Each structure stands twice: as structure tokens, then as C-alpha cells.
Length: 203
Ligand code: URA
Image (tube, rainbow, N blue to C red; front, top):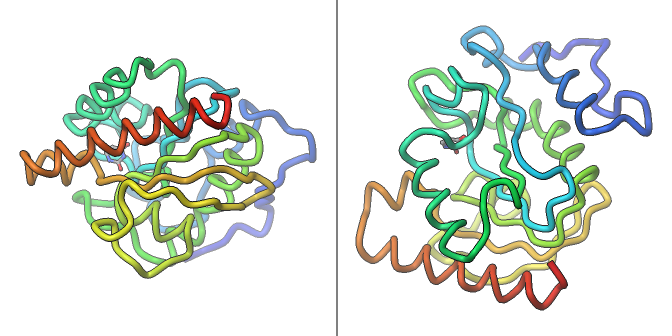
């Protein structure tokens, strides 16, 4: 991993989300920079009460520069719409902002190198509810070794980058697509939990 000496995840204090996004586009903090088409920073409402955190861009996301636009993205969109929201109401980001080659799992040093960008997103968007999609986002944001099957659908209070929110883990949409039936029903149930939490915290 090569860390650019000039990199400042803080940028100037007071930088806006657009400025942070723009700074991310030249990021070379880890080896994923070499294989990407572009940085996939995040998309959605910068004042969202609800933020989703996935794993990392796939092939379609790498080409389009937008998270969750492939098959898994289609399911995520359905689940969001299933609780009466649209993608424009929420913010969607990933743990790593560049596509891991061949869609492999992101490596620990890549996650560590990229996490300042996610921290700035959490700080500036300040969501009231964070939904982690799958193991990577859940383990990073809850700093746990427990897996998604144990944690999904539960509510956690978490504090990171000055943001205090309720965190609800659920399955990654790609895992739901692979497993089908029961996992889909569980993901739908988790989204109903998210809707209830949002109503309670004023989102
Ligand atoms: N999977 C992810 O975790 N993120 C995306 O953006 C797309 C697929």
C-alpha cells in the first residue's frame, strides 16, 4: 500500500461533500487505484437521514461511477422502494471506493486506506440511521468480528467520525441474490425494521 504524503482526508476543515468527492477522484492511497476505471465515491441526498454502506464497486459501478447500479443495485433499489423511499431520498456509499479486481473481497489494508473517505461522508451527511450491507461494512463500522447472520436486523448505536446514529446491519444484496428465498424475506424484514427506526428517530 502506498500512502500519498500529500493526502489529507480532512481536506480543508469546512470542505463540502462535493469538495471531498472531488478530492477522492485522484486517490492513490492503495493498489486498487491501478485497476479502476474511476473512483465510485457515493450517490444520493447529501442531507439524507438514511445512509447505506456496501462493500465495493463491481464492474458496472466501476464503469458508471455510481454505486449499486448492477444486479445487486437493482435489488437494493427494490428494497428501498419497498419501504416507501427512493434512491434520491437516501445516500449510498461503499467501504472501498474502487473496484477490487475480479470482484474479489477488499483486503484489510485497502479498507484501512479508504476508510477516511467513508468517515468524511459519515461526518458531512450525518445520517440518523446507517444500514450496513453485508460483512465488510458491518465489521468495519461496528468494529466487530461477529458475522452478518448473527447481527442482521438488530439495532446498534454507533459513533464514528463525530456521527452518532442507529446502525442496522442486513445482508449484502449480492448474497441475497445468491441465496434467494429465506434471505430475501429476511432482508425485507430488516428493511421494515429500518423504516420503524427511521420513524422513531425522526427521519
Ligand atoms: N456491491 C457493493 O458492495 N457495492 C456496489 O456499489 C455494488 C455492488
